[in-house]
Image (cartoon, rainbow, N blue to C red):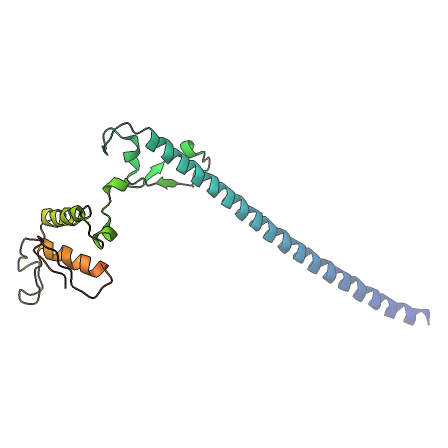
Length: 191
């Protein structure tokens, strides 16, 4: 009779051991997953901090390059900062990057070189010069030349606008009123 009582006790003990191993495995998997997630979050936070300091270093580098400008006008041959006008890559050692796969590009653009299109809407005496600059730019780009047959889809369907007409249309597009643009001394009227 002792034999019969021992066999059920061994089965219960075996089931208890398997149950304990299953619980321990589940806890181990949960702990591993939690540790991996924490590790990834810490790595992302570290990368954010590095990116912030790289950005601050690039801005400081740009400030130093602009402050070292000694010429009054933008000159590619004399101004050091003009090397970055097209978004050139900054050498890693200048901004403190030691990782080889991280690249930083710096774009420095002159505010003097931009055309303030929104100032065309409120055309006071000083802003009329920008209108004339835009007309001259369009003329230099050849917008006043008639299109050849190869350049237009059909000679009758495409209308050629003069540079002054294009500037007047641009001003009319930018303003919010419903009136067509017109100015004395300006040979075009908006649409």
